[in-house]
Length: 134
Image (tube, rainbow, N blue to C red; front, side, top):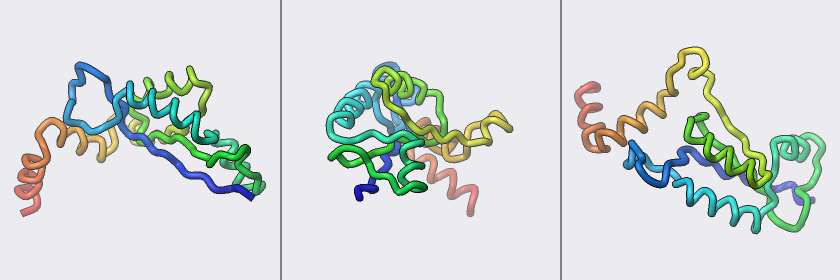
């Protein structure tokens, strides 16, 4: 029984040009588009329903390719572009949205840290942390 698959997790899907946070590490939209094309050729892309079926009903990954789930962490606005690309390719993705942005209307703490590092650089961020924690 082929019930094995893996999850490919994306975090930031960044603009190709004019990115206001160029030091924020992430996948460029054009690269993500290329990834999607390669993934379609090489893997069986699983929806959340198919993953649940594999776990609960012990179904197999269909086809002779390895299964993959495409996931996105933190529900960021730049993932909207990824959702469009997936939709254009008739692919399901799994988007994990932190509930803090619904209740508090603020980004999750890791996101704040990522953007602070992208603005000020790693060294400045570490120097400031040392001041706070000393």
